Length: 464
Image (cartoon, rainbow, N blue to C red):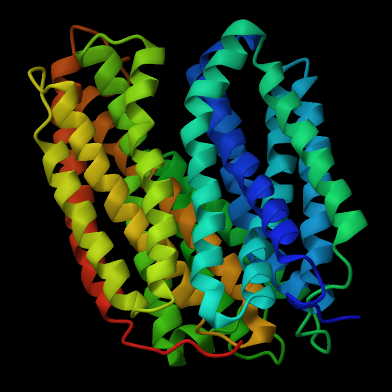
């Protein structure tokens, strides 16, 4: 059978496979970040080189998400999801046994390709397999799985790294990958493909991937002059991509979705803004807790898991609510709550208590969890069946581009205040000043995001 449904596959098994996959996808990224100092020491990596252990994954994911979303629509979402899991698992195993920094960064890049195949089809499979009446609840479950992965990573990743080695983080994910692959092959029959009569736009895909590479790479190096040039080339490439896509019969991205589908366009814009305003929070607070407050990494991690833990709980609740209430209102309320949390973080100083910080993170977590699932539901419910892969890939791309933009804003502002100097007790005051500016920028961005979220208008869920 070519077109599967919730009646052709055990829905509990399907959700278990999706949740385990997305849990470890999120876990891997956050756990590796915890282990980067140890990895850098083992491989004698510079600060810039070690940052590419994380950045290489994000960059390849951003490049390949959209093309694989379209490939899933044409050739089968389960097929792409399965191959993505295989690539992710094999590259994860290769990461575990890397003998130098170049190998590790290269396999992390390949891991990002597998991650792109998983992320571009995961939400689309949920939307295909479940009716609109229960879609929000199911999306809430998979979104919560992501946040649980982010929550568990600092603790489990830290323990694995400390007790065994950083290699063990990858080994654990390999075991989970083998179980997922086996479950898909044995128990999930048929596939979801609703654009099988369309053709893949190879030329457009190449323009897109090159442009995203240049744009994201340039962002990661700001505010250097050559970074501005590289990012500008990427931006020009994106413009050319848009012009080209509007002229062909089977585009890799239907630009008309952004022009004629207000819900799709503004929901994606809201997602981009939200991630740009929140992703670097953990990075900044990790530095704040260790340099300004003098906490050990383990103790800092225990405080920082507050936000993703609250996000996981809230995402479940907001997912169920989005089945009954207008996603536009729920997501906009979530964005407004996040603004409150960012304003509180703006007031951090050396006298701030841990309780105040935890309360601020709880508020941010509630806001983000309230925004994320309804916003995702809004995007996935605004397109036709044949466009579900593209919709899933697009919102995932907005997430990753927002993450890179968030880190670029933080890095640029810190560089303005500290230059090339490392953070130390002597200049931690300058870091605190830069943090205030960053949180102010994030709060303003998120405030603007409220209006982008509201601008999408109301749209009833349709039977896609």
